[in-house]
Length: 400
Image (tube, rainbow, N blue to C red):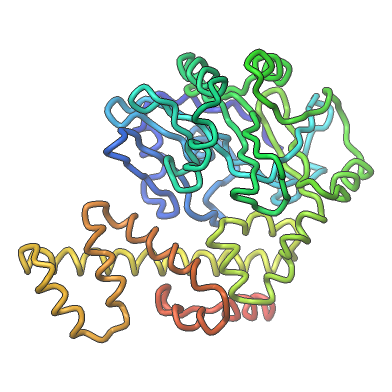
């Protein structure tokens, strides 16, 4: 496994240059609140190649990294992209130098949350910034002064506190009956360096902030330890963390089976759900190579198909807006007279013209996610990504 030094990042332009021409990455500019987020939408086979130079290292930082739009300065740096044990060649147990000391952190089954300082106020964000998922965190933390003081202090030091939001309000798989915002890391915005675990625990305790549990430093690994983690029930798994920030995750089979990852691949609607919810990576370690390849290709087909549909809708509606001099009445007359099955999407796109193609893409993906209750519904929306089906990729890969 490659242990590499995280790239120093001082300006948004460095990231934009690294992702140039890569459609799986998105740049979201929040003009009202003055920040810009860079995130990946889908993980293709070559989205995060092995780290061999600065550019490949920068790609692994595009996981919600956030910049001040006016200055280009990094203001929030989430976890770098890391992988499951055995997911790729570099994370095979035999490829890892277990002689280097590491700790095992408990992997929490929640949503990653980081703070931003907006107009002097601490606001909590997901990878895409201020979102509906983060809104309940803002509400919950509103009167918890310790979180605001803690976050303000560390942000003033140029660092990002990284939390996990564990709550029944937004349950993933594991039931957390008591809502908690749990500190899991503090990361330097420019260097990418992670705070030492012992110091992290001490700093959290000084503010009364709960912290993710972790083990003592240890070396070596054998199959018994791997099986112990895989056999864990009631928890998600562990994250192996080295002092230099290198990380590998390993989920328990109970958790993965609860997700029904294997059964999901028998039903197209469930495969699409994994893609839309960004859970496909979690399934890969439990799949044979042919199904990994098939699922990646299907995800790419859906992503690019919806990306094209979003672009086509945006520019068609933009042309109508120009031709009708902004008259929504004339636009409506045209749309209602054209029975192409896209009328509703065109009206929604009209309202998103100021937000750009990415907003139309997000609208389409949200709609797809709402239509996965049955195979009949999936069939009715297949045209949105060009008509491909899961069986096209699954059967072709099994025949090869």
